[in-house]
Length: 169
Length: 75
Image (tube, rainbow over all chains, first blue to last red; front, side, top):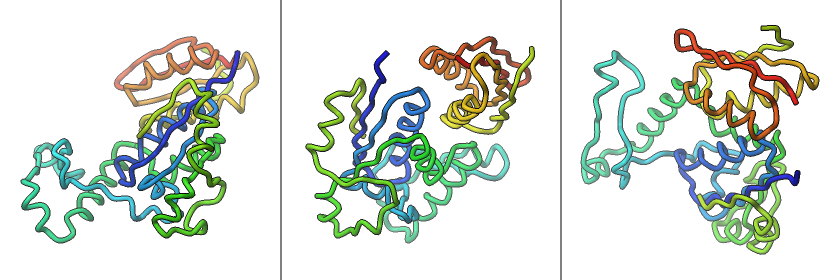
């Protein structure tokens, strides 16, 4: 049987959007897929050494429930959604939302992004960072974790053209 | 059921039980059995799908008090 292949383009640089590429890539690798992730534009944030810049914003995201990850059950079940216009006026709102999200992630036994990323690398998922956007955003290769390659669209297609699954995230 | 290695994946959520199982299977020989404990309700379908795609045989799935027990035989 030929080895199945999956390619993912990761374009988003927030904590919530960091999950799908790494969850799918690590699982695909566990299932025996040869897997590659191409990180471009804001997706470059996912391969930086320092992931503390990955945040989640309820701003402009009406689908995000805002619930507390601690306290009695009645307290946890309250939905704290408030109008975007008000959210945007509260200093530190994103930092608080990010801290709450990280606590919820820990409470539910969901892996952290650095952990999932490491699991991907252990499973030999290939990481490619888009060289054009690295330059566009003024990054240096030293900003990124070890073990990644740098390339462009043609590099992506070389592998993507042979894949069974190809996703844009 | 007899088993050769046990994996405690209780408290872990998708995709960690699968990833840990993949790792644990690497430590046993072909034909040996891995016992997996999980509390993730999604793992029931996931382990069936994992077995189907990797060729390892899911010998049994059981649930008791919110805990799932799987026995998987390595290909």
